[in-house]
Length: 418
Image (cartoon, rainbow, N blue to C red; front, side):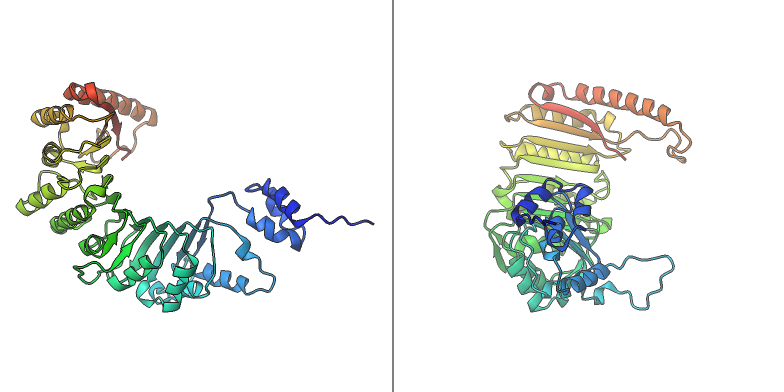
């Protein structure tokens, strides 16, 4: 019997044609020499490796195997979480993820994942990361361009350490809440300089204003801040402080800011007290962001007073580069009756000399005919008919309010999917 041995590069080339298909799993079981290449092509490109704290321990155990080929696996996103998945019948005597060291244990192994461009860390106390773990970030994660922090605890020095350890970082996202311990000490001077970081996303309703001020005061952005996405979180009684923090961040961004996306976690309506109104007007006026190309106000949207503040800000502080403006309208705001406000919007936008601008009006969803039942019990087809009629009627109303704007802006009306 003649055994023909194929060259490893030829095997690798053949297996690459099966990338992301069910057949590649069968190829991984043929023989040990095929295993490393098969694992490399086990998933389609842009795959995510997600490990919770139990899986991190198993991952490290497999790495210690003398025949391990795990490091041959290629993935673009590494997601590490210290949450332990619960089973309904499971009983844990010590289930505090803050005291767990799973993520530190993995980082301290000094593993290299050159293909990673996105890193997600969840439920970790960064104050407990050792110098060895931070050194591993600096040495082995230099290709990371996006960092997402979920339920993270830190102080300003620890956060500075993480950001400094990721030289290629372009975007940082805070999501799914920030632990109550995560209040950086007040810093009023630049602590670090970052050559790439330019996109900041604060996608959580549990966010102290000190986090916003940290990014406004502590970092010198070599390329400037290009994009800011943020929410104004609860509780409402502290929103004026958040307005002030956001205004400070926008001032730091200055003329480098190209896009600002704002999604309030509650309606910014007409109930602002004096302090709120002053802070909001200063925040939404964009006096130092003359190169803005995109402004997006998402749902739950703005009430009439907030829309007036925004439009007056655009009227006073011209934005010659503006290409896209999206306005979310508050529910129950009576936007159909804003006669004077729509005149102000139409006059202001029609007089702006812009190149191919687009205006998107995001109207609130159709309210249920039965407020106490919402849409329960309604026939789905009947609901679709009502929603279609509501959208067509609302779209016609918006267009009738903005006749001059439609002459120089591309106008789109959308309904927020509530």
